[in-house]
Image (cartoon, rainbow, N blue to C red):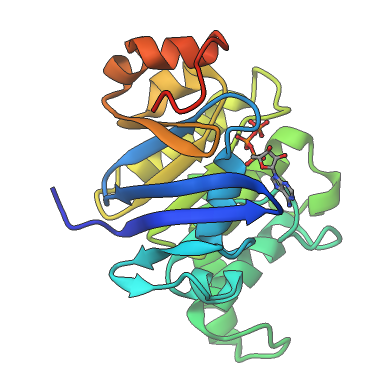
Length: 255
Ligand SMILES: Nc1ncnc2c1ncn2[C@@H]1O[C@H](COP(=O)(O)OP(=O)(O)OP(=O)(O)O)[C@@H](O)[C@H]1O
């Protein structure tokens, strides 16, 4: 097993008297896709927010390749290779699909967001953007404005933007939420492609068990902000304690 790319150590956040994530210690490795499951309110999104920097921990730490990123801003964490897909927030709605991806490629290449650059440089950026267009099967809508894309293609564009940033760690929060059955397989195929790269670590928050079964190498279960179970998907999902949690019969402190 390679050394972990991401570690959370005793990660905790309190909102007033409520501990939403409670001492969660977990290590994630390249080449591994971990699905985070748990009932509503278990702390899954809060755990994600603590990792990507939308929230700052009350105590504990987050390490990326051994570097302590606990107090870093989301953009500093992104700079360290942590990539989280967000619905639409990174899109320029009036620009085309190709232009949006090219801007992400540009940002990644360190060119910043400058408007003017030599033609050859622009061509190289466009070629790279076209590569991500093809990888995400969006070439057919390359010249449509992002705002006019159907919902399914917008979700694919979010994945394309994330890929263009070339993170080591991909984080997806319910990537097929709100998608029609026709489009969901496209996004799942993309995530499967990312997971096939042994240098990438993938974290996924997901409720849909068919998605979990299709993609998970490993499952962790959160319950009342605590890490309740961690391991092989089939074993974890068939374990008594996890089934009790999903049936709502688990008792406090069952972990
Ligand atoms: N900013 C906040 N202030 C106060 N309480 C919060 C805040 N964010 C989350 N919580 C609480 O923390 C707990 C965990 O919420 P979280 O959204 O992480 O759960 P979740 O497992 O992602 O749930 P779901 O599956 O429903 O999205 C909940 O009780 C929630 O109300």
